[in-house]
Image 1 (cartoon, one colour):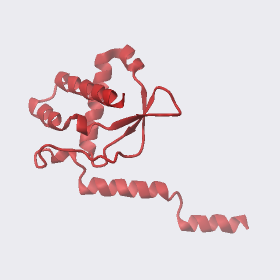
Image 2 (cartoon, one colour; image 1 turned 90 degrees about the vertical axis):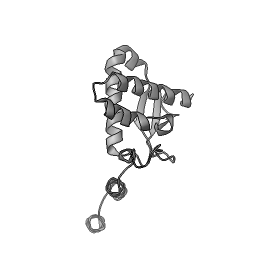
Image 3 (tube, one colour; image 1 turned 180 degrees about the horizontal axis):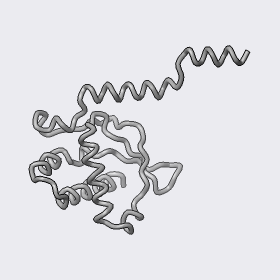
Image 4 (tube, helix red, strand yellow; image 1 turned 60 degrees about the vertical axis):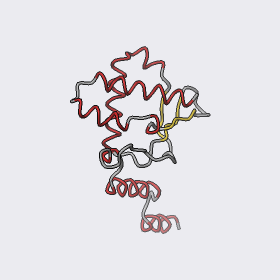
Length: 145
């Protein structure tokens, strides 16, 4: 079931790419990495029916993510409100354990996260884990006594 859903997502994005008014060179560049292996995995949410938990690729660049979002928005316009209403909701989950795969590492390196993007992501996850500084925690303890 999940493979079929991911295949539908890929097909929808490819149809959008064919229809969008972008230079052919740009379309070809995106098409090279827009493969089934590079789609985020999706799992049924056991707590909410008609909801998928999307697990993005850990090494996907911001640029590739933006292209996929644009293609998704275009698919929504092309498919219409009825088709969009029939699709399941999606919620972002933990990162996938399967990395993005590129056919030609030099030509398609734009789709892979740069070291700078990776560091930003690590900093953001550290910030989320530590909701307050040690000094704030100490101040709260002092006021409780």
